[in-house]
Length: 408
Image (cartoon, rainbow, N blue to C red; front, side, top):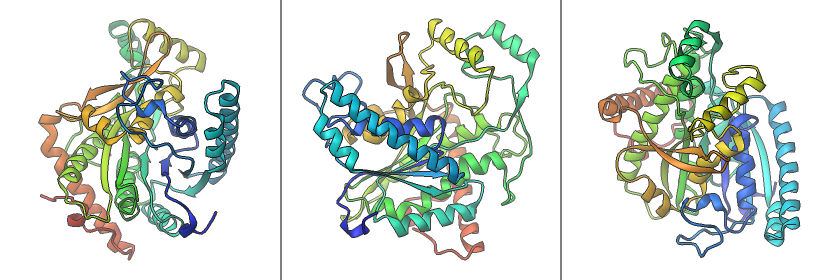
């Protein structure tokens, strides 16, 4: 790639877990959207992209997309697939006479890089941040998407019971998926907790210098939670005893993002720095390999049946489920501020009966009862992060005070 001083300002986006599932779909959707001069996903749902925009959306002819993945081979395969997808998008726009010139210029300015990242290793997160600082002058968006579920099969009697009593919830918030309990990471932490929560917290903190250097002055950390969450036990923060560790970890993501969003809003930003905004989203229910519900055909039939029965939370296809994360990435600040006013919320991917995806808004579960727990959780993560900084002899990024983090 060119020397970093030679690169003109443009979006530089990091996506974790980008080689498959929703993460890969987020990358696809970003490419498809930014190949248009006026990305439809950047606009409010009520506004047609064919009308004069109510909010300013600046077209871009360049994008640097950083695939942060644990498996280098899969990451490079995903890169090849994304470049092929970009070529197909240019051909599609040429065929439909949408804006062929912009699409071609954007394709020439598209750069996709792969960087190794294993969220279950704090050392790997440190190395990723170092390499990012070496290669890039700034980062505009950090999309924290990667996640694991330690599934071990089904509790069949519970599945039948939920199917009879809550047929739509059976494929929306399943309670019959058995999950491993007590798994530990090489760092000695709860495995699912480190992968889904703490690894991302460390990454967000370590990337702050690059986010602050964003010349657009509007940096975003997009935390991908889940429609299916469960309230945490404050006595089991690392989820070593949790029977639904995936769901509780995604609830912790919601709590952390909400607290950091509030702290960031109160922080005084220097003239030469960007404001870092934390945004909470979920992709709805999509056909991914996170849990592996049924045989593929039966799973898809169940998802579409739920949509026929009135569920708007089943985009099914990951590309459609990526609309909320991409909207959070591209929407003008005024749009997001208007959507996120009031009680803590998350932007969710939804879909009509006939498959048109759109962005909805869902509340953060039991926020008022857990606001203090959320602050304590951020404090716990920050103190543990500082412990690893010292243990590995790393140079600290911003101090908690400079980061806007208030510890109780």
